[in-house]
Image 1: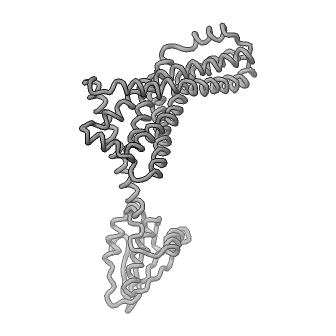
Image 2: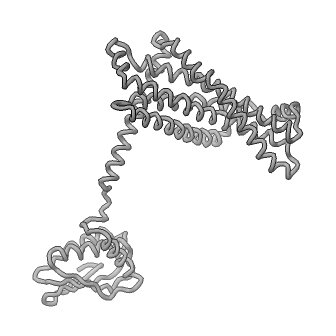
Image 3: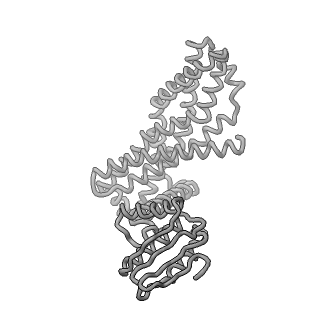
Length: 372
């Protein structure tokens, strides 16, 4: 019939002799060729496979699917002459069909109902998030161009609530992290008599990564959750609707001050975090490693340059924007119940931390590429 098979009719038997390469590269031709085999008065189709040269899972699938088409119209099918190395592919298809109710086109590359719903939901959430972030960004830029539209007093209050009030906990955590870094690095460096290089490790880690990262994570847990809870409560008590009724824009009254305030507060918190982390390293240096404060400061001046400080500080506004937008967005999505308020508050914190880490990874790769 063609290069891949020949057909012989023997009474009520249709003998199909397979040959050449039944592989993925020939899949379309194989499918078309098999579709052209139409039993007329025959009640049995026998596939003779001794002439096959190469055979793979794609060839096995189209062959098995066509045999199932024959079975559905009452024509029995059989296979003979397979080499052991070839038959394993067909057997694999048969085993899969045996564990699932056969549905024609089972391997048709169409996503399942669950996958389609998941992809659609992901797309909807992504579009919603991008639209919300874009709207908030435009509102912030509009407020910068027209300062009278910004609630300056509320921004100052948010700077105090998210920045000044968070200084003690952020500095405590970073001080302890500086101690951990210094102590752990000292255990390794003392084997080589290089304790002084502990300063390099601690300072670089704190300035470039850990200072801003720890500050952002603490703020995400502290302020991101507070944003979501506060706005969610306002939604439940219909205070947001009341603002709209009074002709006020809730985004400018509730969201922008939080976004701008946190973008001001987090870089300042990062500075305090860096200081506390270095203080923790210096404390271990003075008490455990016999590195006095003067030696620590001298080595620090030799190791750290302006770029190291700017790398960490440049991340802070971006992290703050992600935290504030995520917290306020989830808060504004609350509706219906206090249970949803708690759920979205948790989601805000988790998503904020996730976005912070993703953004930090992107910053690290980009700065490494440009040698900054």
